[in-house]
Image (cartoon, rainbow, N blue to C red; front, side, top):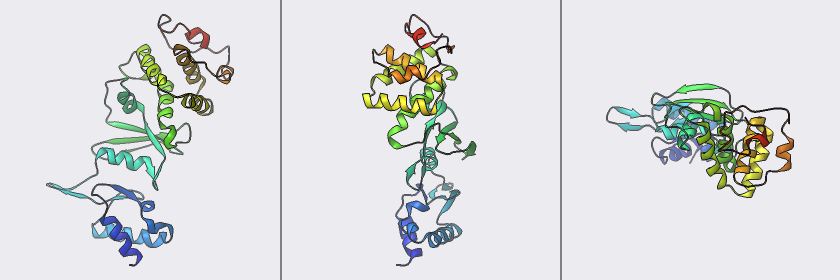
Length: 242
């Protein structure tokens, strides 16, 4: 079986509507030019549809003609490159999933490692990409999403900041000691002082000791105006939050 036949056989075995790239084809590692030519030939023949640069799918035939991939598949295609995760869902879609807002956005925001700002409209969904504040890996996604929430805590739509922080307190309570240590490391490396102050406040609310480095990373003369309720957050002044 030559390269063209192997590529065609592999693609025929894929579910319709599943997005793939060159890296998903085993032959690409040893004969990249031949694989690119083979895929381009299949696009020209109509067997494969090009979604984005380097991204393709086998169209599913519907009553009204070929159908595009599902919204979830479109998002997955943007999050993975050559089989490796490079980003995660953030913004209002994340806030909604965590129960922080009832708003359901038409535009889904993705934070990508080394990603630039761009917006792509797929018809049923718009996807906006931004650059992740910290290199993305599978095991860090949840923690990075929590950090993004704290970064944007003042601008979550249709939400009370005290209730939003209480919700995050519940999520923080489920973190392991290793998770908490990793959270602080990433906050220190990629996020602003307000995020680190809020982490300290949430740890205090959970009676969890914060690392000395977390406190030392904050300027003692800087205050963070978040309009929190001191009755709900009695330790807020310890972290210069007002």
